[in-house]
Length: 276
Length: 310
Image (cartoon, rainbow over all chains, first blue to last red; front, side, top):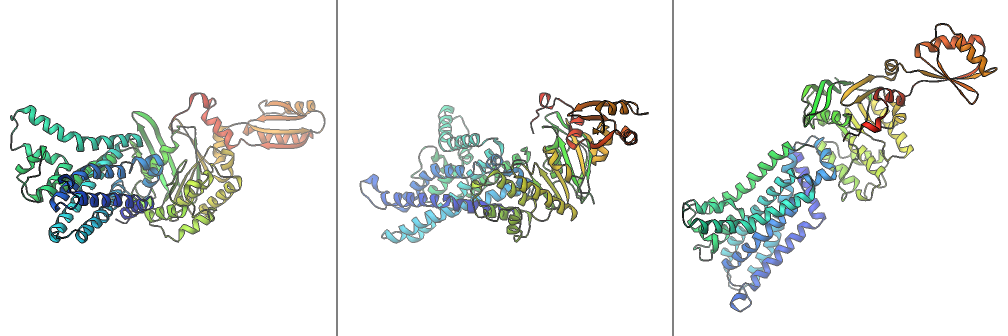
């Protein structure tokens, strides 16, 4: 456990040193405050629209940004150490591959978690203080849910980045594959789903369809943040399938957790096979 | 307790045999020189001992445990060839990081940095370090936690002559305190005075191993005598030819001195006879060096047909 923490601690201090943590927090804060302030712009005025609308907009932007940041943060975790020549040295220390990978995950995960809490937390407090007659309880609840799911989504993509990082032999390859992962889950998946829905002309089992959304962590994340406000009025496109999902919020949370655990386990299994 | 014990160890990499039936031992308080051409299997041998890979055949025990076990690796120090570190961190930060991983006392960090001569640079980032400074940091890293087994792959690369001498002195001190040391190097004349035993690998097989005397006997290479004649060179040559029981040696005239290559067994009879003849004014004796022995076992033409990837 000690060596896991030693690795995590180095990652964490690296991201403080190169200002990654600060930069991510600032991006999140600016994003959240911007959306909150100009949320009503569509209706022709500047100001706070409503908590559900703000969270929905944040989540929609979040699915683009958070996977990207997580992948960028973590794609070189193992392949970078290998190219830098330190992986060989680390492996001669009393440190198993699992401990190294989990230490990295802890370090990167905490970096992302701190940045998220700091960035969106500050934005949430700013909204609570500056916007008149906003429901504090509902805002706090929505913000907590949003921050929690954002962290889990980020961890999921950190784990996915590791799958790439333990397999790739060079950093540029890992970067390319990480971008491909982002492209697939954020842009292609929903299109594929929609396309197959249309092409199947209703022949697909309607009870199976909503479950397909669970195959994409970004969809789970959006459902979680939008469905929580009751009726799925704002669900559009493939997300409307989410109304038929027979699992509640806890099921969605579990889905996000599984999307962290499964890729991390896969990365660990692949890392054990990597030749050093 | 042996530092390590390899018995009939083999290793294959994608069906290509890298090591074949290697028997090798190292006892505490001993410096073993591990030599071989590029791709001979030196690095593979070290990686097996470190537990980075599993042998496909044979048995291997390290410090009375199994290779790669964390209780075993805690007592091993390793300096890889071309050691690299995190460029953004300072020498002190890096050494502290590795000390924590090894469970070594953090007070060792400044001590070791001073010992390897990095006391002025310990708070500078490693990306500003020269190759020699990186090598020193690598050495400090290998010495963390007072290892019982120390393995150094090309430790003197990038070190100036004074630092090299310091390093060998340090290794001797460590050996005398009971550390077992493996030294891989291509600078054979440099390591010759410091090693207790040598092991020579070619194409994944152990060609020879033992102390220098044993290797010389095994190689049976001629000893070179440089003889300065009292009188003329010709009469000296005649005196040599008349020696009984000595295979006629190869003789060469070099600057009015006679260079005689004689079989080890013939050396003393020849010298005794020459002393008696009074034809010799001065004698120089050149035993085959480690380099000569190495070339003998490896074979000539090394550059042409070797070139395996490390």
